[in-house]
Length: 282
Image 1 (cartoon, one colour):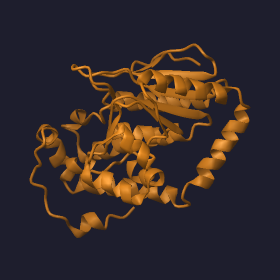
Image 2 (image 1 turned 180 degrees about the vertical axis):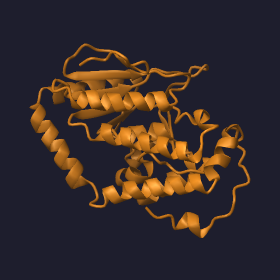
Image 3 (image 1 turned 45 degrees about the horizontal axis):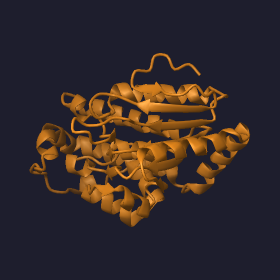
Image 4 (image 1 turned 90 degrees about the vertical axis):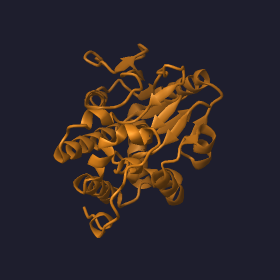
């Protein structure tokens, strides 16, 4: 499989059947337009590469203080001067890229070591199997920015951890540690160290790579179709409508304008709830 042209995704193995990638973009792996474009291209190339049987995604990124980071979220700063239409188009593109990764006819594994906020948690949800290290931290801060998780977070989270905990994480923006994430089922395995988590991912990949590729693809396809709610497509549409309502009512722009204050722990003066927001329809 040709990996030329990627700048944020680095292949770290030469195995024809197991594609192990390291995400490396900017200071905190914030996923903006450039990274989303690479996810789109990755999905396209993997879908067209019959030799690829497993995808592993991980990060070795660390903060200036040495704290590990998986993906600190979407690159909100690039949207500072965007119009509402541009924001909506970009989030639709995010959602489409993650849906394409989720639908790949191969087994996908994500290894999370460090911070996975917003789009970082949503990206993780698009993978078949999620392995974490003790340093992993998760959260969906979007409602504090005047938006909602719009790249499958509002669609898939309840399928994974149940509606009550999904409401808790989405409405509070609370960050949870690796132990709590495993308790809720947000991660499938918790290993003792980053090295152990990566080794476990390779162990699983080796097992899958020894199996019949068409059988694996067929089994995964059946699981995604039969294991998901019959209303999955309509829920994706509903997520999009709810996100776009937040853009059009001005909350998203207020969140962007106050981004630094919000990150610092201050809340802007949010407008009151209205029927238009509550009753947003696809």
